[in-house]
Length: 299
Length: 248
Ligand SMILES: Nc1ncnc2c1ncn2[C@@H]1O[C@H](COP(=O)(O)OP(=O)(O)OP(=O)(O)O)[C@@H](O)[C@H]1O
Ligand SMILES: [Mg+2]
Image (cartoon, rainbow over all chains, first blue to last red):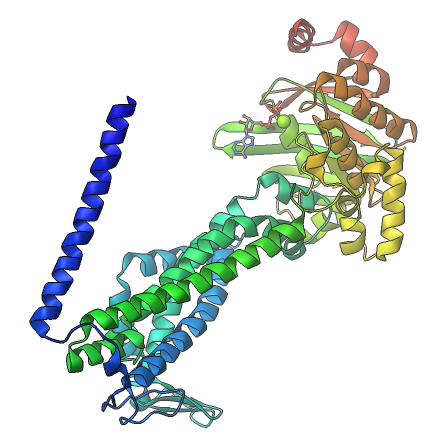
């Protein structure tokens, strides 16, 4: 391509880009004028005057919108962090079952992965909520009520209470993400050449030792990037909490927007908080990746 | 003389109708070197890999060091065999994330449960036997092909095996690197190691082997002492193969 054409193309792209931004800003201003609210964050410190079913820190309806949002953020963090742990655990198990020698386990895990990946997450969440947890109280099969105190408020376990909404979301997100993590794990294991398996087997190492000492260390560099992107998806998917009525940051913002009409401010806060959260996840994973690579001394 | 490897009527198909091994029987006695030759796809790798159980077979019987295995592939017996048999591969298959010394001490520490100091001492001895002790702290990717293959031999020797298997150990090497590996193998043979070697190195086979086994299409065509095999092979197919080999 000639230089002139290149410059022309660059200008064209810039023009379109800034044009689109301009239209967006124009739209925003028109919307702001129409609602007659103006752009500011002062409303954040007014009392929220709505109740929250679930709050890890003290909260009453006379607390501020800012505090309500913070509680929502904590609720999001709680469900994301716990799903992340469960999904990783479950996904790793299924990933290994999928690659292992046992053909029955392999078949079951392949079926699991297929079913979970071929149905929408929203549907799965609703399934766990309505089928899994709402009916628990009347379930005659549950005879372990001394340990788990079950009601349709949720499950109480050694002093901690988990709401049906939280559990449905936790289970739904964990199971959904675990199917993808299983595929990431499987891909990582398959990326290690067959020769490595043959080499450790020839040395008389057991399958378990060989996996731990030889295969997994070499699979990790291929697994970490895929795992990171699944964690990011998990964090973003957690906003579906609203479907099962769990008060995550998105659900609370939604209530606030309905009460105050502060849609633009709320969305900016939402975008920033998810951006920060996902940057945190990415950064943490990058550090883990670097530690792994350094400990392996590849050169 | 004690037989180390006895194979009886080994048969194997990867895909139906195509036999990678077709009724293969052979014996290797203690301290002997068997060289296996044959065209590409004739089943040499498949055969040698059944000897330590990294390949299964469909029919027949194997007796390795007195341990009998059949097509049921008893995992416990196979593990026992692997602890007493070393293997060296065409592509070296060193563990890239472990140092040279760690490659060699892995099995002594984790299979034989030896103390690390003890394993390292013996590992260093093996590396010096192979002339690569100065590389002990390096990683496989920092070594030349010939050096890597000598590490692989040291690794295979770490469990003090009674049988060594080599699958084309010099085929992936630059020509000027081949002899350093063959020399190491020669010394092992002189020390009385029992070996099965898949190779097309005629010089090595002539000097070192006690028997040459020639395979084609999964079948054993002939087994002869090297002086007969290379000057006066009994079979037409063997002679054709040797002609082809000398042309290259
Ligand atoms: N994993 C496998 N799956 C299917 N077929 C295989 C597999 N491994 C080997 N074969 C087939 O079995 C036959 C014997 O293969 P093998 O690797 O034992 O031959 P080889 O004599 O070692 O050949 P080469 O000199 O090329 O290494 C070939 O026809 C090959 O295509
Ligand atoms: Mg081969």
